[in-house]
Length: 220
Image (cartoon, one colour):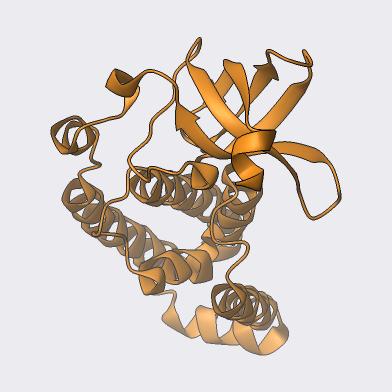
């Protein structure tokens, strides 16, 4: 009852579909308010610029005003299951691409070890792994926003972070607001980052250099 008395209306003036957030301007106060996809009453809602929404004023954890309990004023704006399915993300394709990436990455790593050039190739490996890991986070975030049951395994995301993609993963977590609020995932992620740092430190140490020297069949 209290929510209906506090209900306001507003028009969407900004919407970032990948990240799942936007801004609306309240028609009663002309105030610009932040809103998130998770605050829609209907979990299949997909707002667009210019949509008129009914909402209840609220505050975030920092006490800043936001729009909550969001609903479309026009019923036809609600997405049907068929429309929602048409926006589904093909994660099978992402997993297939992951297989090709792993194969290519492993081949490049073996070649670098055989030629004794791993320390020089490491920056390239990190950049490739980071770009690919960021793309995987994008795909998984889009699947989460669309409400898909199928998601990328968290173990896969952590694996690509371990092989050098953690800078891309960290950037994706911040820019896409994805996986950063899950304590268990974050705990594992930082253990992966630590493990990767320790591995690189060992490879660049004297013992690591001696080990790579024994593997370098074609090095000078």
